[in-house]
Length: 239
Image 1: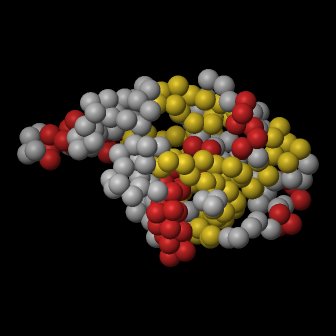
Image 2: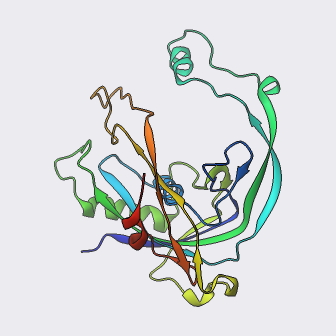
Image 3: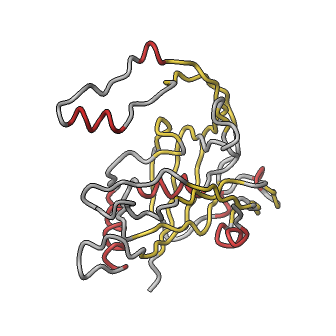
């Protein structure tokens, strides 16, 4: 049995930050694989499963707008949050002192089709009956009911997904005419490969500590008539 899904997501804005332009943010023309994996994880995720993106369909024309956004120059350390939970110290930032304005070139009026499946990782199986069918049925139910445990977003947290629709198949005739033909998207970030491989470096799932060390992995996809065959192009990934 195939445990794959096809969904359509829509949003007013999206920002898939080009990793070479993180101060003044500039979006890739199309979603990155890791951003879509994170979107699906907002619906359902457990350590025993890993999502794999197979195809991305871009339906709407690629339109950019320029905005200026207020951002903070620093973030609260995790150690400060843990200390405050223990009643020691304070985990806070004075926003008025840390605020800065940065420009961003973001996508507008986006609609994407995502074809994906998941694989078992063998990590932290909670039950002896851990199976693909169990996770498939949970994710299927959550997609049908519009459930999620955090707001799915399109790249950045402030650009929320307006709707997620589970479909049997994609209507490729709905792809905009401007996306017809073979478009070389150049080298894009595929994902970050973390050194710990998703396993706590202290081997303690109750109080896990993970490594922040990671290597970027890139691939060079083509968008053909609005369709990016991720499964085909990921064979050429490079560190």
